[in-house]
Length: 120
Image 1 (cartoon, rainbow, N blue to C red):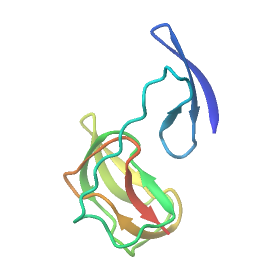
Image 2 (image 1 turned 135 degrees about the horizontal axis):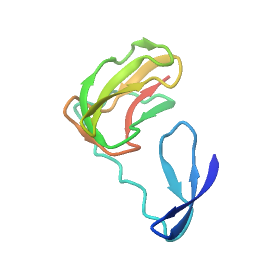
Image 3 (image 1 turned 90 degrees about the vertical axis):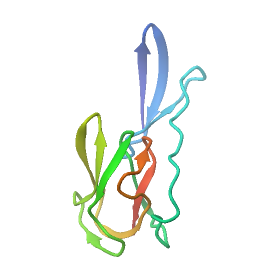
Image 4 (image 1 turned 60 degrees about the vertical axis):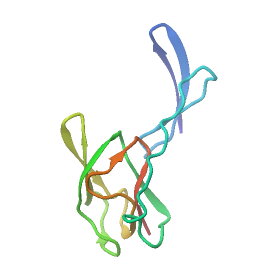
């Protein structure tokens, strides 16, 4: 975790950032709230959840799911394609493992930090 002091329009915020999650946790009382979690459709949810969570790096729309439950993946393998700001972004496996669950489907809108998939 790293601590930063950020000034926005003259207001100073102290923030703590967890490495590898792509999200910031407000440390100051006056800092804005974290983004709400996206709703997960029951039909797209898999049976079991793994120990390694793959989170959305930014809000956007899932264009396609490239991995399937039970598939072995290596660090850097593409799991999903996320459209954000009119660009296609690859969401990749953070480490080697097996896909335990895919928690979104093509066409879903997600918020930053939402769990997209899990790995074992």
